[in-house]
Length: 388
Image (cartoon, rainbow, N blue to C red; front, side, top):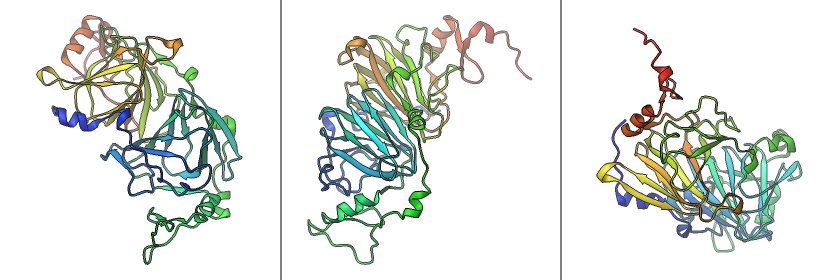
């Protein structure tokens, strides 16, 4: 792997702090529909499915996925719509009622703090904030090009009553503001009843199988080569995909390919993951506690600190380590413990390349990686005979 050194300027470009969030209040065609007219849409990495050309994007760079957030005051509704690629919600301290089906009556689920929800593709979905105004749903969308979205027929009808239309190439036309439909442009028409009838049906039980609540997380206590070394004691919970785990027995809660893996890291102050690198895109977001991310090595080392809802996109191939500085901001039940959300590009396992000193100290502690990249006792590996 080529050596990658990340400049301070590049690190600052890739750091998206909570204070850097810029909302778009007219991202979608329902932005004037009563009950849906007070939404804030955020696009942190990629445009997501925003239909407004003026949507602010913090980092416009291909990651293989899009990262954003929905901010909605209590009672505000996100109208029924359909995605072609993965849509995953991560609940950061809120109460949201999700509903699905063409009329929103096929089923519903009340999401609370800490949930990760992988909504099936090709079904209509919408949600309402039933909690505080400050609740946030972080969103990860599969692929760089999501293919846009399809709105429920009633959503398009209601929007037209407020002078809003959508062109086939995903442009929002606001006739009230003076926009005119471009010459020759086709307007999106509602999905036919025949096509709607062909969409998948999901029971409440099936949908619940795509939800990983805080209590569902299966924590791996020694997920990495560095797990028995000072400062390397983070635990890992796989949610979507196999991702970073070096435990051969680890199984994610959701196996279906999404174009990315998603996992939680948790640690106590002073612990985390020691220096490593890999060839995938990766974004980390602090859920609880203050985290320190070190990038590069030796004299080139750079430091980023992340608090609640701060994110950092780590360049492919760069050395990185994660350390919890303190558990400030965590829930009372987990006082002193921090949580870091880790989203990594690609559907397969990620092969970690560890710093030489990590490999050396791990071997002294009795651990190494086997030929499949899994953590194993070094004494046992020493008994294996190599093929000619």
